Length: 327
Image: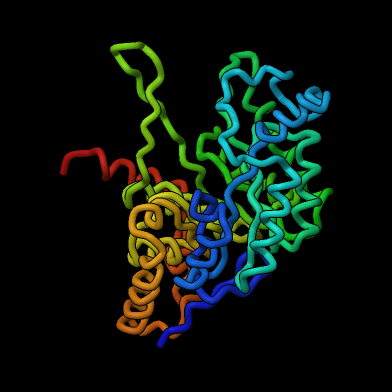
């Protein structure tokens, strides 16, 4: 039977299946179900900058904690049972103390700033790593691409100064020079890159002309974007790679490992099919590796990365032309 072990953010994991941040990773009971199902690590549901902002407004620290200057009317009211930073940290601590698999804390915001001080508190309760998710849509035409990237890099440097545990950065694909930015993130202290943050796009209700929020979970075709970029970056950056978005089957996992991913993050497939899906994915990985003569997952890793291509830029251009030109 082929070995499925892999390394990610300083941890030796039993397999490449990691439960990404979602409602399934919010509560201890569901995290235990995921552990029992076979995931090798879990990313706890994200802690949002705006959640800290509500507390900051209440305590008179809005200028320090809130990128919107106290204007939070666009954001949803806290749900019943919601909790502040201290309660979130306590919940993460209970999870860390109650499971055997590594627990990764996720912090999600739009900028750096005082709110990132909470990452050191998360480290203190036993998380194995921090996943930083800086996600925004720059809508101001006065804000340049350089400014957007510099703010992201500043946030990474800030978290790196706050914590000693490994740090990953979950990225959007929408940067003008993605490869250069990724290298800069690694230079700024990122130990891993999570590719990619899913871009949720609202619709418009023609009856009311209001934004219509219709969440659609990902499908396998969406993994082509992380597949491409992990293959490009794997051998030119010294960091770990996590693939996320569109992972639905064992075949999807195998493709991403062949491109160079260290782990694959699962969300939509678990939301749709439940934790029992993990066992089926693991069985599919073992069967394929055994049937194709691989003794371990590591033997497959990066066999399809761009290190096997003498001119990656020409390769990309040629494939583009083949795709759109008639035969």
